[in-house]
Length: 314
Image 1 (cartoon, rainbow, N blue to C red):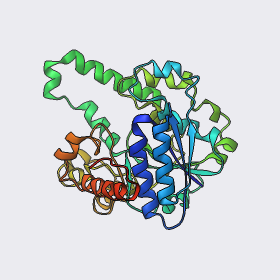
Image 2: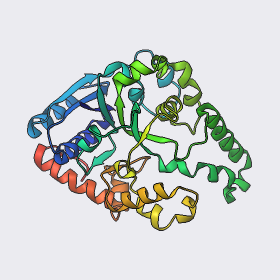
Image 3: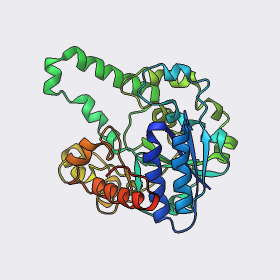
Image 4: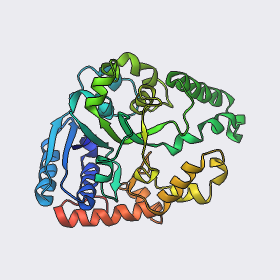
């Protein structure tokens, strides 16, 4: 079983820190495959060094962006390699675990690799950021009164996205940053699996400012056909604030998700630094160092630097 990463040259170092954290906490050996868009010799040298110093087999593959020219020129805001999860059923055999580069693993990844998916083709965690979307759509902010045309456009984009998905995102919507895929099952049981990465299917998402193209497409395709992992395996850094200070925003969630949020806040197994507040960017590293996730990342970077001789993120 392979652990998969997909990055461009800018995200090779964050991916290596995440891979180091996987290696550090794994109860037995793992294999890693990293797909790199526009790979260069500097990236290859760093990957080789981490592989040698940690005794961790890392297979490097050049990500071929051919056929996705429309996506790369669309201004979607994400590199083409971000579509890698859509391609995995065609690239991999058996079960694999895809992990975003902007993560820090704090638990034994074999818990996910060997998890019972309950007959489902994929396993993932609920995207907490999407759970409150319905409330946000219905709510009028003060800024909306001063910029009514902007507010209307934003809501129209959200509605278009929901229509493309075919459902209102909530607890039934997963985050694709940590994703177990049974690729053989997908190929065998889904006759239309070849359409996952079809540009015709992706087009409505890449031209919507509020879409998350690869994640939305996965949720559209696997709607109601995914296994839910505990939220502690895909925890955003602001989880403590969500639990303690934003209770009113999550008043409509199920008791099960509420319990998952509390568990994730106290015992996270994987930090996922979603959005623009990356822990290796100096501004956020300083402003948010009071959050446990950023302290954990800084401590891991120090260990990574000492182990590999590669200085990053401190």
